[in-house]
Amino acid sequence: MNRQLTLPESPKARIAADIARRLADAGHETYLVGGCVRSLLLGEEPKDYDIATAAHPEDVQRLFAKTIPIGVAFGVVIVVEEGLHTEVATFRADGRYLDRRRPDSVTFADAQADAARRDFTVNALYLNPQSGEVLDWVGGLTDIEAKLIRAVGDPKARFEEDALRLLRAVRLAARCDFEIESGTWNALRAEVQSIAAVSAERIGDEIAKLFTGPHPGRGLRLLNDSGLLDVMLPEIAAMRGVPQPGKFHPEGDVFVHTALCLDHLPPDPDPALALGVLLHDVGKPPTFEVAPDRIRFSGHDAVGAEIAERICRRLRFSNDLTAQIVELVRRHMQFKDMPHMRPATLKRFLLREDFPLHLDLHRCDVLGSNGEPTIIEFCLQERDRLQQEGLDRLPPPLVTGDDLIALGYSPGPLFREILDAVETEQLEGRLTTPESARKYVTENWNPESM
Image (cartoon, rainbow, N blue to C red):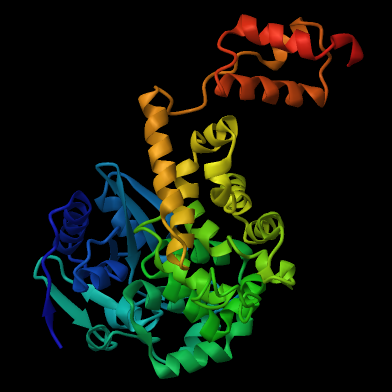
């Protein structure tokens, strides 16, 4: 099966084509390869372009003024043109994978051998950017037409080489909305326990990509059906079969609800939002109880925040990302109380810098059940009202800890109580100046009693 492709008119495409042309002009067989070719065949704009070539690393370094030798032993060099980085890799055949991550040796080879060592057929397509011809030695074009994810060669061998390919198969199937070919699927399910040999950082990175990519709800369902979910995220697997009150959740159990919520994520979601949606009800299984009136999950938001933090730490997410996710899980039940909050509490929530993420999570939560959008409408109206009043963030505090010390107060736990009380009075309009705030403090707290 032959296909012709035309590159889009974008800086990345132009620079990649120019690098490939210069390598070809120097006598080195060169192609665009991998995910960029797959994306082009699917009618999508590639995020990045990778190049495979017969040129050895030293040839690439001689041809281009600025290069970064990130993996010369594996034939990989980054070429920097106009500030953009393009990965250029020498055609190679891999040795044995002793650590289930990298081959113990590589041999520079031809393009067909390079295709044979790749993970999935849809990632093993080669595009000549000058002629537009797509070269296919492994049946990738047929699999794209059939919407199939198939391992190159023996799927068991591919997964044994690098166990992270188990998770990548799921991510690729979800991203493309393809099925996983039966032989590849059976090998994947047989090997799920080997994902435990992969480092937490690599698993965490793939999970983040899976749930920020297209079709994240399908991604969760594939993780579940494959058995990977039980190994990697048992806290989420525990959601299966946990019933919910039908009045509020006619869609089904906690797992079904979570997958539906993920279906309603916006395109290219913030990682904190995507992972917050994934984990927002992770506290329900351990708090499940059948009360006299109905099923309840008392305190599942607080319990879920603790579980979410443990998961994030286990997956080696950054401190900032972890804090954002935990806060989203901890606060997701506050929306039901918003119409009844006192003004200061409502303003504190609405004027948070990350409030749009909280609102997006609530929107997914509503769309993943039979919830009403009335609270969303209330929030938007209140935010508009605050903006019309000139408030798009919390106002500067009228007093600080330094001010309290200057007034004769000793630092301690009471500081937070005083500062919060002053902020409440400020947000509700009863204190408007630093002078009035200081007077309020001295009238209500005796420094000598602290």
